[in-house]
Amino acid sequence: MLPSRDEIAAAVTAGTAAVSHGGEAETRCPLKQTLPEPTRDAIGLFPSIARNYERWAAILSMGQDAYWRREMVARLPAPRGGAVLDIAAGTGLITRELQRRGHQVVALDLNPEMLAGAIASRASAVQGVGQTLPFADGSFEGATFGYLLRYVPDPLETLREVARVVRPGGVVGMVEFGRPRGIAGPLWVLYTRLVLPASGLIAGLGWTRVGRFLGPNIDAFHRRHPEAALVTMWEAAGFEAVRVARRSLGGGLLMWGRRR
Image (cartoon, rainbow, N blue to C red):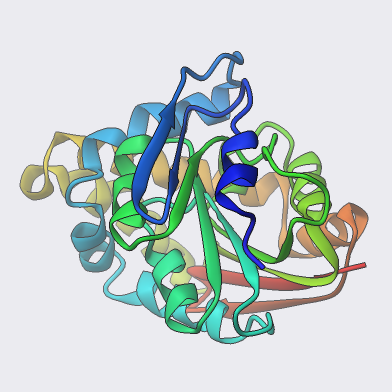
């Protein structure tokens, strides 16, 4: 069962700036903690593109982003009607996929501008950060996150925090950019270093900043955390039966695991 209105409101801690229950904003307070640099990147990049994020994310990924999100949710064996936490929910693309499959969803994101989309879909929405989730142990039967681990200072500790709020036996799914290999590798570099930054000429200045940031950021993340190391990290965080799927010539990386 989804945490109640009072439980969600009580979860608003020093690390949480806003809460909405079922689409109605209830509480606002400032984020008080000093955010680490990777998280500050997210604050700086996304508010300016929130208004047209879904449209240009679809265009610039050539439709692949939506496909990855749908597959991740479709292969997440959470019980229908169960409470699922969608971390780094953004505008609610994964949140809405979960809702369509009958789950009760709490959407959490750092940026209130991005969360407006999740609130519009009548999801309960909390502003906060993935590394300090404002919920009690075992609050959810499942959790999802998209493009989260590149924006936290310690991915292992963040995964442990995700595991903390999921009940034993609960399931977790992830969507992230991969790093294409082989012949697709040079094409990836060309696309991320030239095409994405140039997108701002049409999509707006905010997308120029995002385009310049994404390619180097994704490459650096996968140099530090290659696929095998990510699986080990999930296991160390408290997950078992960890599965990986590479999609779109390696440009998409999906993962699932079960809370021990």
